Length: 73
Image 1: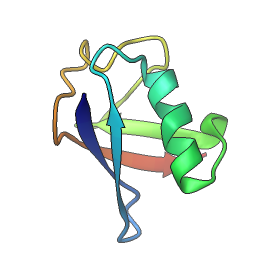
Image 2 (image 1 turned 60 degrees about the horizontal axis):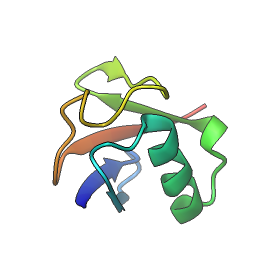
Image 3 (image 1 turned 90 degrees about the horizontal axis):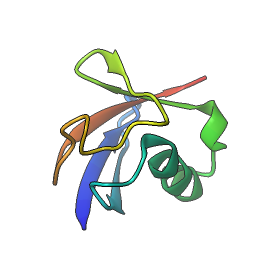
Image 4 (image 1 turned 120 degrees about the vertical axis):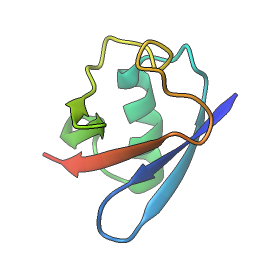
């Protein structure tokens, strides 16, 4: 189990617990429950690259305490 920090760029940082083998789409669903925004309206970015829903967190080298940027669509 890892903990990923998501920054919404509005001064709020959300910590999300998940597994490294989870898909980005599954991670968005977990995040959407915590912030109350539909997963389809969430876009995650790491290092300027938009994360695609069908790729696992591990493939994007997202590990414990990795920071992601959150954008609302």
